[in-house]
Image (cartoon, rainbow, N blue to C red; front, side, top):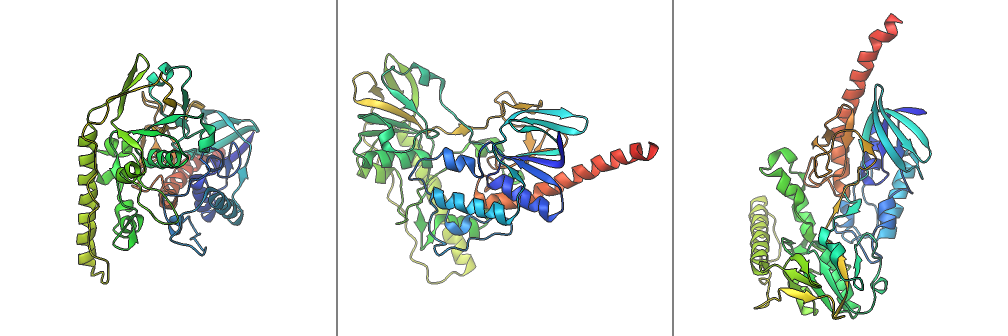
Length: 421
């Protein structure tokens, strides 16, 4: 068994950021990765995907973006290359192809059993991410057998789906992007959505992410919000990282021919049933968007930013007068259902009693409810940006302090035993 002070599971942005910070502080550690560096970005994303954040926002500890297009949006091959280069320059101690099969608590910390043997760590950092398993409603199994049920976890391109219409379920960034891609491929697309967050790609000459960054919104801490559980469940912003910086909202989708309906509420006798709350959800999304734009206007005025384009507001969402409330899945008009309904983490290998009844980690800002156990990359874990590439560094520096404090306690407890021997 190989022993280290700290073991990190996962070599994505969070694992690599934590590794860099621990190296800066001379903490011996290892990163266990089931595939290659940035494995999820390599294998679990669709072909056309680009980052939703501008390239300048792909900052990691000790590494800022140095390319020619800071305001562009990185493709997956470019992002993977960036992570590979970062791992090499950081001399990250990554063991690839080490799939974790079980983790147990021991007197010395944690024992990790992998496809490449056993490892021991006094501290353990779970950097395997929050998007391991598609979160699909239970009634998905009730769909007619001739209707393909697929998730973004497996979808790569429109040709993966059979001919015919597609029902896309979910109105976050993933749902609206795939609905537009499928519509552009010549499919008849219906988009079903409930709560969503509408946002323009750019506002008053700057990317919306620039405004959120410079105003400190992304740095808001988890202990500064009133309803943390709700905030952690919010869908991602309706954005797309396109070269032309276009806004992708429901109006743009409907203009392209996508039919928009309410949230899928169930399935009965071969028919998908939709909620009648679409108008209310869209009105609420418009209201929240305009509140943020008002906040930006006030901040820009107080900061004395001159030369900005005039303030403006996007047109309200144009909802059909009578959105349909059901769709027949047996007549052949819809041949596929794409579930863009989010993800959940997979801790099936974690044999430590730190999960709640929903299978989520019990933690306080990434400090898990077990000595020496820490997490990275969870929604609003320590900051609003915790799930972003740009958030990995700040969280890593915070949690590294706790990792080192734990290692110091372990060393202090062991010192008397060594002296007595």
